[in-house]
Length: 153
Image (cartoon, rainbow, N blue to C red; front, top):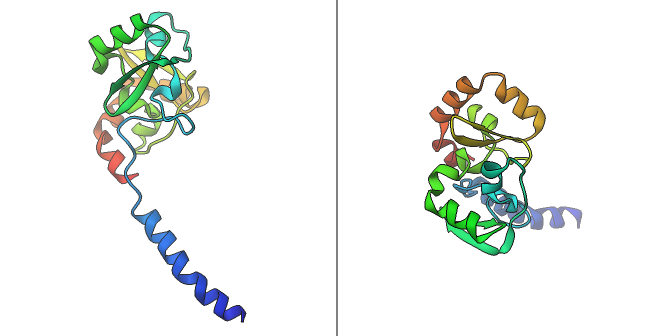
């Protein structure tokens, strides 16, 4: 009886493992696990304006690169949409240090830095310190892996 149950379960396990192996590549823009918003729902312009990350208002949205971005004001939305490639974080909002290691990782919205007029996010404050120990070299490494590394995730 137990052997019949195991035999019945095996095809389901094989299908589950096959679906994991065919997983879609990571999206171009890092989307929050729970809200599916770019920047985990933070207004990207608050990083640029006053360096104090703030959650955006879900009623003030814009679409860019297939993702929904939210803002605290219509002015911030307009500023972003005037040059989204400039204001959007590097590496699609994934961790800059992970990208330098040929990997993809989520970010902490408070672990960030603007360097050479570009916004970079990191997994945590500790990881940001590691990334910042040699920013230029880490950026150079990440640029070598990006965006192809998304296809391998």
